[in-house]
Length: 295
Image (tube, rainbow, N blue to C red):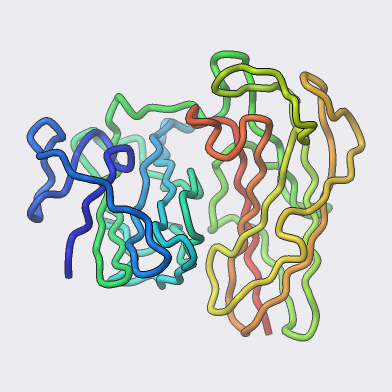
């Protein structure tokens, strides 16, 4: 079993795993990037940063990089997909789409969690093991609720007619709404969304492509079988707004078809003009989950 060389931006607080020990980036040799492959490459967790809750507890914001360009992977919770201490299951995904996925889940820790403490996410995929530490390093304190440049905020998402409203990457599997479905019929999923319509980009260039202020994308988060969304990116029915700096309201519907019975978790990603990952600003997108029991 090999330890994969990690890209520097995927490592929290500039700490790297060298020879089985964590050392600072200043002490570590320069490591090359592992190039993406069609199949057979590793998956690395990505620590985006941490932020506080109103009650003083802390939240680690975590994504991943699946270097397999054409290989989605399922890695069950256990020795090959664990967060410790306190795990192995702390809400991380077990399904990994190809390429980079930014800030797909949070891990909550109490306000007594000290800067010298850490959690470690370990993934073993295709015979390669990667580990990332999650720490309260001051350089990685982020604000996923507001872009400081223009005050852009994440979309507000509501699942179904009676689901709770969610804003920002704060959803938890433990509090996700639950649904039931059958193998015989697709499950209908409806989401409504509101946004401030503020535009932010890396260059602050104006919008020229007529894009929607908000885009929705469904993906499998956990589960034993394949999930087919029709479509994965639902067309939004706009009820208000649509231009830059205009308050925006819309709703979108899709269906999900399951290949096998069991317990699933689905994730909805809502991005605004800033795009997935907020163009590197760690704002402004919203995650929502729904748990589905398929009979």
